[in-house]
Image: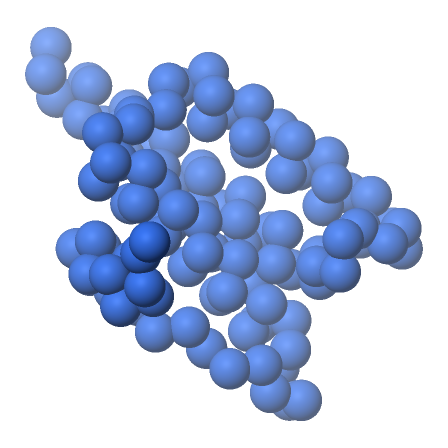
Length: 106
């Protein structure tokens, strides 16, 4: 069983999770969503799983749909809409990085 310290060690550049403050809960939620998605991707690739571009785009599409529902006031599993926006931005960044890597190999 992995401990949280083992999980953080899998990252190339571990980022500390921000604490939610009353002044900027939306910004903190965004940063938490972004950081968590990047950590999940790092963990998956560290264990030898590389999601296809199709899987990443489907995850992004689903996140955007849920973000739209959460933003319009529908309750979505306790996550703030900005957490979902952070997740969507992280998925976009992963897709762009993979596109840059593939394009440079041609």
